Length: 209
Length: 400
Image (tube, rainbow over all chains, first blue to last red; front, side, top):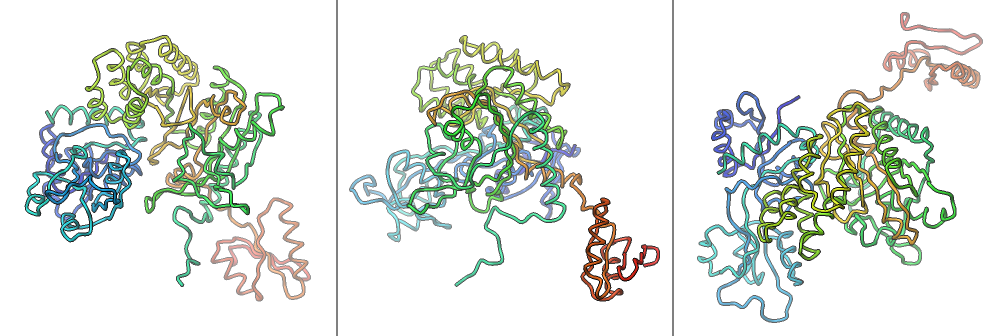
């Protein structure tokens, strides 16, 4: 049987996950000296790591071309549908928050609010749960601009330290939820290769402590 | 105006040559298995009223249905599922028919999948429904039929058993509102251990909370029964577990070994499944290729309560797996190319018909001269050409 394939979100999550693998004792030299390669063996070919953009990690795992994936909860909330989400790795911590220009009373008034966000599904879900009907505008770049330019009343975005918000005269009105890196598993893979996958997951669970 | 006359809608595709042949082969193979066990073929309309699929425990959300309106403005959908229409026809036209009823089908279902996700919107499903029968005998019959059908086309499958009632039995013990239970169920379905723990941490510690925590991990082989025994908090849970064990043990006779698994965390959302549930997986396909279970409440949605069980198989997926493994059907060779000389066209067609009667595969040459016919035979690898004129002249490959 071919080695398990794990899709890692390129960038910070990739580095943190590699750190975790090394802590477990897997040789990650190939990932560290990857060059332009995108599929890389780990250890003694115990498994293969695939480097991808966050949303693509989900796509690969959903289709079963990768057995496992490491991806942020933000991406799961925005794109995810059918896979197992088996482990919270604890790193890549930040949160989704609703933010608006400082001093504005966001919930006041009866006009339908306009929300700018990179995460329309997350924003929609948040306001649906509140029973609020809002208009959502998808922005690709710096979302903070939208309320400053008068395009939206508020934004839903990832907040780490809050510095960017502060510098642009915005403040957090409400937290939407916490975010961290998760291990996801393809449904069929978990059933077909239970022992291997569970071993790896419990190793990761031990090592993250 | 932009014209879309050279592409197919997203999620659909053309089936050609080997793939088409393999597809039809799988359809026939499965139909034959089902027919041999006394199941009758049923074809339900491709268009149905939206209302048929729109009831409380329906697993089909309105977003995923293709909708249009009929001549009187009523909402119509392209068949998104086959079990529900079969329940509809059972509850109406077949009310007075003696039970049980055994049906099989091979038909497309249509789902409006999210854009650019690579999923099919048109899926060929083949499956059976055994309606008006409850109990172990009926359950075993359907599961064993599923195993037989799988064995015929993808022998390297894994099948897992679960029970919709195990979660419910434990959830009854939790002193929380139903929407909370639904949230817990969703995290168990997703095997989302982290958020399940977070949710359960808010509750008073109890045996039921511990059991919920453990539920998504209760999958695997026989050992699951031992592990789960500790979490049977009431008679209902114990009965449920015992029933799954009985089915599991009965199936061990088939010698499938560890290819039969148990997953007590198999708790599908809003599904019409009420009791034993099962699904099957194969390598190289990231989703279940067969799903099924008992749905004793579905017929009640059509005012004709009765027990029923069935399953559906994804014929497209099976075809893909066979093609990937190079086990697809090969296009059979043409045995003879028949060329009619000028004025002998009808004679040639009759001659070809005669050869076909003898179980030979014959193709008619549409070319005017011999040289072109021979060239075509060479290109297509046809080893024999018969020229039909006053006499029949046969040319074999050696002479080509």
